[in-house]
Length: 211
Image (cartoon, rainbow, N blue to C red; front, side, top):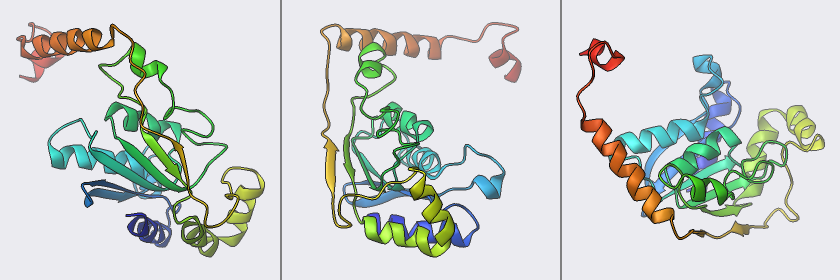
């Protein structure tokens, strides 16, 4: 899957985007894939991970992606890490770490247990994270795309070299840190959400106006 992700990052570079790409898979099969569309759409939120997660939810017909793995050629940023936690993706795999912008290395969104303990109805348990997969091949795409840019972001610590080009590390295992009341809180919140979803819209509300 990482091989496909790296191939997509090459397509991103050829499309005049930064070489970011993502693949979401389930049971060894690709569910959705995407490249950055920031330049194409003139929208800084159009990151590959967000696009792929959105498409995976649409194709599977559900928000819960706990049985899925997400592959990125670069460590997901915090903006992308939050949807990973919200969709409960079980495993995150990336090639190049990002000590300056990473959703684990820098901001630890992917490793934070507090958000899933306080809001279990929104955030899933922290996923398994594996870094450094096919680093050499992923880095080669960036180097070929723009050698000067690649050198500059590495010197500034934005993207990191592993200890060895072939190094691969499981940075964290999938783990729940459940508090006693967490399942009950989650059940209550989901029950209330279902009740509100079935309630008729009040007159004058935006929902009623749309109807």
